[in-house]
Amino acid sequence: MKRFSVLAALFALLFAFSVVAQAATEVVMTGDARVHGTFWSKPYFTGWNGAGTRTGDPFTVWQRFRLRTDFIANEGLKFRLGIRVNNTAWGNGTYTVDNPAVVIDVYQAYLQFYWPGTQIEFSIGQQDINLPISGEILSANPVLGGIRGPGAFVTVPVCDSFKAVAGFLRFVDANRDFDPTTTQVPDEFDAYYLALPITMEGFSATPWGLLGVVGRNANLPGVSTGGAGANQTLASNLYSAGSRLAPVGQRDAQDLYWWVGGAFSLTALDPFKFYADVIYGAGGATERSKNQRGGLFFDVAAEYVGLSFMTPQISFWYATGEDSSTRNGSERMPVITSAWGAGNSFLFDSTQEFSRGFIGVDYLGAWGFIATLDKISFIEDLTSRISFTFAKGLNSPQALRAGVALWGYGNYFQMGRELATTEHILAVNIDSQYNIYKNLALIMETGWAHGEFDSSVWGRRLVNASRSGDTWKASLGFRYKF
Image (cartoon, rainbow, N blue to C red; front, side, top):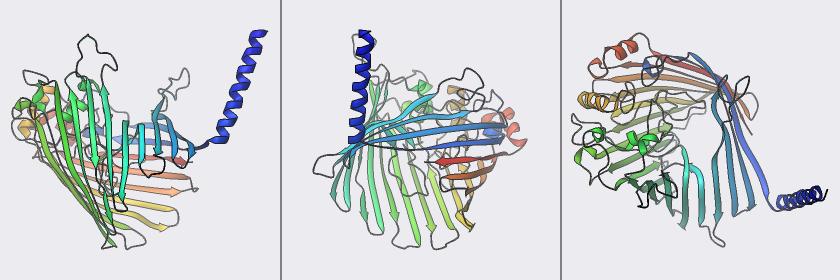
């Protein structure tokens, strides 16, 4: 009886503390729920998965839920906790008729505060990460964007038009706090970030840099970035195809990867607006030449916002591709993971509302353009977007063949994801949103793509499968925000 009295007193004390905490802390919840069905024909241009070993179902129902809770102590201090049930199909995982698997996880957990008496802001923990990008037309930075990860950032305002942002990120710590032997091993992948945003009336520029340190024992091949396509990993995004040539692996204990770039926007000529990004990245400079990787990426975009019923947009990108040899390293820019794209293009992971809604074409080693008619609206609460995309490869066919031979098909290079100089893709997407209520939207996303691929690179089996019909998808569902 005494034990139950102690427990009752304990619960009463916890309840009292919760009441006090609630009075002192404002709790704000926001989130979104999405349910949609997606029809696919010929995903990855073949109807098979990215490795060409499994047949894709033509119809799947997906459901996603995210809840973000802010614990706000005052205007200068808060903590965010975000949990999710992420992109799970009906009949699988959580959404099964019996014995559902639990897939709730934490995707945001960070502290945010201002140093007392200043506007110096700190953001520390698992949080959204997106390097600078020039405008909303281009959804995310092509090196690192559209993801969440652990990091610490500080923003220091210098004046009204200039500030400095610095950060530290830890992407991988393979052995956590103890290495497997009494000798310390380099098993981390860390990065250091600096940006200097400059904002003036009608113009903004953000020069930035990122320095990554990749340890030899970080085991990157086993760490999936969650990107589109089969088996894309941090290793395939950072390393050259030639790193699989003998002797295999990273020679140096730590390799440096670095990126420098600038994001620019010009809005002074409103209703015309212009955007541009220039990035150069390289890594493994002290490694054997076969392990080195470096390349250039740039994009430009423009839009006209002077019409009330639509916004015409045009975007162009260019990214250096592989030459004919794998023994001299890679000529493509290394990346970590990103969600770059424009106009909700069916080819890229850009601004799709629904999961599994894009093909996953690699913008590296390619050039092309995206023409969009955005925010088309002739009926109240109904908006639409139409985009046309053309992508042309800049990779040598010899390099793609060699990469497939070294890594296996789909692991490093994949038909329809990386493009040879002899290949191109055309795509169209038409997307519409009808606001049933202020917070509830009925959304349809459709896409079509046709690819011309080189059988001397990928073989007749895969290319013949792509020629038997074009790729298309149609997604219809609901999005509720609260």
